[in-house]
Length: 366
Ligand code: F6P
Image 1: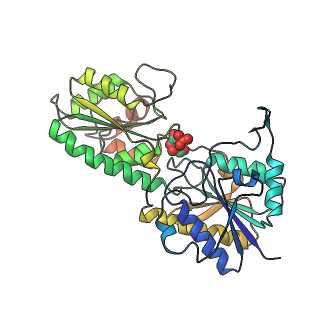
Image 2 (image 1 turned 120 degrees about the vertical axis):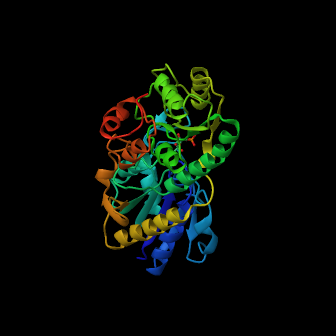
Image 3 (image 1 turned 30 degrees about the vertical axis):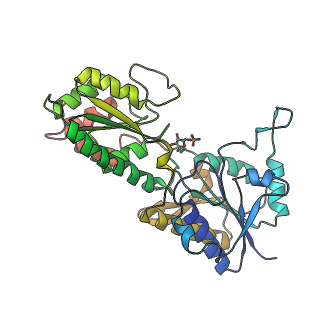
């Protein structure tokens, strides 16, 4: 029987998904495998007939590497274990998904997804015999076991470039410019983007902050005079004086509060979904290519329930059981946190105390 590789993308999109599809298709085609693209995550497998597209080395040549989004479509909806039925009641349709994979003759499966998708497919595929491998992708970079997920560095680049643009207008008007990045639970994007773009303050969901301390930090680094200041906040941080997150953007409220407390002009920009779009930067293309090829190599070796990963500067892999323990969070011991603190960036109350004391001439206490 000819080996048939099924490829699907699941969860929120990001740059570099098409580059993974292209790499995996090329690597599979080189081995003489048939490749089927499964549309819209698991949703295409619930359609009748299943929504699939044949992929060949020819069909993925040239532009796919460069294109943002996913040519296969994706979904963040329709949990197969709680799938909305026609009577309005939720039902378990996981057996239907497995049957569709079998009927399509899928002998190997590559799931390109975030930590939530890895968990869903790990459970969904457990009763089946189909070998499968996961490829981590997300602008949040919160999948455990890998230093980088596909799409993250492109989003970081975009946040950095947005700060470059805000920096010149902040300087012209001597304003506080606040930028809200995505990241509901994990603050990697705000942290990496903030450091890349020279932020003075970075607020993450992981570290509590004190708005008075942020204002004091700003007044301290500006010597009490209106000066350009760059503040990055992750969308998941709480508004000032709030103990529970509400829906909607936090940035404008925090900017208004900082304007009140510092007396400096402040403006806010919410980046939103532009962080998910666009062409992947070179590093994401390298990551996506390495991940797609390594995923197929693992499957060709007869391995299953593995996730490909980037560790110590090389492509690698780990058992899926270790990858589904997520999400991963920024911690006080994350290397870039130390970097940020030593650059004098305000990161929140709990992380500032110890390194501030430990670093001679470090940032002044707010
Ligand atoms: O998980 C990736 C992510 O982009 C988060 O950073 C963000 O909070 C969320 O997806 C947005 O999801 P949606 O596209 O469903 O609004």
